[in-house]
Image 1 (cartoon, rainbow, N blue to C red):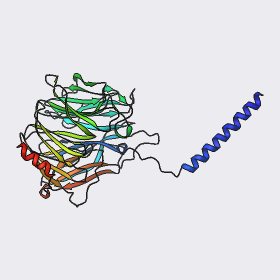
Image 2: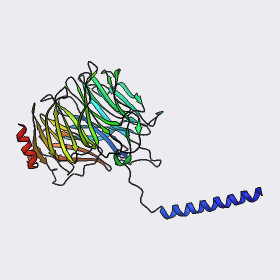
Image 3: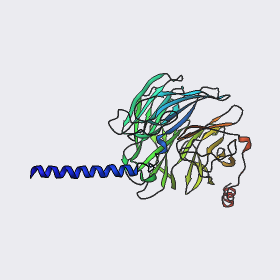
Length: 411
């Protein structure tokens, strides 16, 4: 009986194996589900290099050209460095700056008053958790001071960095909650920050939102403070709340948390500091339309513009004096002008060749040429995409009449 039972079991196993192989053969021609585009490239930032108008551009990519995830579904980004000159554009080919197995993405970088640079990213290499938030600090020539791999937080992810004076502020997420979010991918479970000195030594840690569904922390560094923004997710909702707070890294003090807007299209926001007017500018897509805020160093809203074109996920903001440019969902750039207490809509710029740009949700940066033109570097699943715009060709497109009336009433 024992031998017969074994034979029967083997026959059933062989039959199941044959059926599985037959099903596999019949489905091999079926298309694979598309990869997350971020598996190819994700995260780009440009830092001024001296007083010449040149930039150091850092980005994360799974090879060049990017190959996406590997056969096991793991992401394979390294961190690349590209030198860009205001008079000539990109100088040579991008060079690998940091390379390890698993992904180092999305890279974020900041340069402090002394010229020191902090790079940070979530890192899948040699981490006890799925990822860890790691960093490195380098001098003005990108020689190591406290080189990668430095672990800021085991299990930390989605971090970004800004500089305020000599100090660096690392703003990151931790934990994970499955479900909801974009495409049901879930969300981080809190946002936290760390303050570092210019040598990369930690000075302070602050729990901004602890173990709640807050994540994708973004920030900008001003003269004395850093403005922090993030998305708060409510279970079952497809949009989020855009929240903010202000940090004084010298005093180590954090303001109260403020709700800027509900109805946020997740990930569709970014912010920058405008030295010419000593103001922060924040742009987001709220209920399908772009919204811009102008805030002072304490987080007080000084001006707001509604009914703007929808923004692009993870797109950069380029500052030129008191003017800000950023990509729009319809394949153009929008141009806004900031005063101390005012925001003005300047219009839209089409790409030099006249075709809409297929912006990707992977990151982009604008780089101002010495002749006034703009180079815009966009990450795509096929590699780096260079576009060029001429601010002299800005089209003064009209916003909806109701918004123009509201602008006039607020003056």
